[in-house]
Length: 74
Length: 74
Image (tube, rainbow over all chains, first blue to last red; front, side):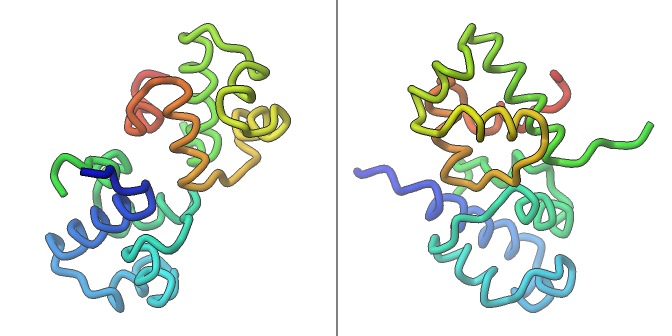
């Protein structure tokens, strides 16, 4: 099995955590100030998200940043 | 004590791990293809590094990405 690239793995993990927290992309947008389209693209592995936005998302999800990189769970 | 911003904390942790691995910025540049100036700026908390470069650095340091976000150790 080919290992998926980091953008895809990060996006899948973000989507998983967002759903666990029962937040819509719209709600995550409101909590972070990051546009829903951008969030959707990160979740689909299209965007090369940066550190500042990673932190905003972790705060909005109330998780440690490391949880966003815990790919064993996804 | 004011919590330092994420770029500063990430940069300090990167520097710490790089030194633990006994790599120079020059060697990390050669292992990642990321210019030494850029690495230096990330370490000083100036750069908003992106996911792809975070992964390159983790691979070069032979650490899990989550180790780069383990700020308890720094």
